[in-house]
Length: 391
Image (cartoon, rainbow, N blue to C red; front, top):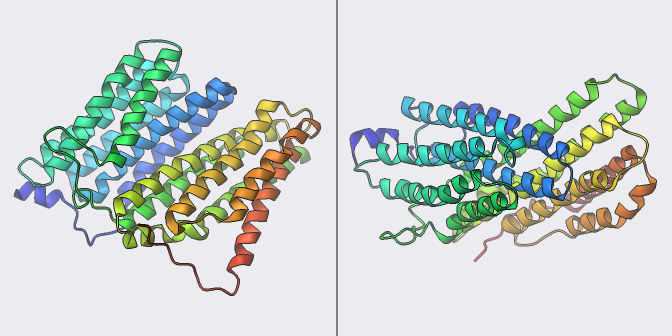
């Protein structure tokens, strides 16, 4: 191991996020806000699919940059500069996101590739002559592979761009599950991508809090944009209550013991990848809820168009689906109230044509409240449930 590279590596006993990690997260509050605003401006099936693709891209940038602090010492100036550079790229990515499928496609794709490939290239150079370099070379190779459809998609319009970017995201999201198989190197060993369960759990929780922060930001901006009338105030109360319920359902109890679940798993990398994959589903639900909250606060009474009902009820349903996947990852089972909540939200959707938006949002909040109460009742008088040991 070379002396310079050794000084940059993070000791495995050093766990926990740092102020640099929290600094990085600030950009992604802005990124999620931009995604919700883009969905609000294109509130249809095409806009929803595009928002999902953009969210997956934003998540990969955050995840890849965040993982640097798990492998390398975030106190070192070289790592500071690398992560701050990625932050700037992420800010540009977020700024371009609402029109990524329009005029800003080349900027979005070019920035994504620059951040992902550039970060990997710097780490390959940093680890030159070190046994950790093959790990970084795998990342550089596969980010280079996905760069081809990313850049190709930037210079076509319409559905071809969506197809090419979907292909790029399929590469970025599938390869980690396959062990980063690289020509002449094969698949990565479990030791090569050793996972700190404590760090992983803390960072996933922090990104979820970022998403809730974006939800509060949207609610606050919508609430203050046009006075504090009673009907708008009631809608803001429902929106804030929904945010609090999302936090309660997430953190109890899978969110609390994710680190332990990774630690006890025979294959920590598989559990980590599964947990990481569940979080974008929950965050996608929160982005939809943010759009619904803004619509409800601005227009609490009157007709509820189907597209509005889709985000007001579909957002919580999507969150619960992601939360069920997360729970299965940690405990090896899914609570019936999660499934029941999704079914109830689907069952009440036809009635939304007769209800004003604020009552539709209140109905969704009541469903979430029922799940939170059920969780609390099930836990009363029982010892905390430990995570499972998946095979």
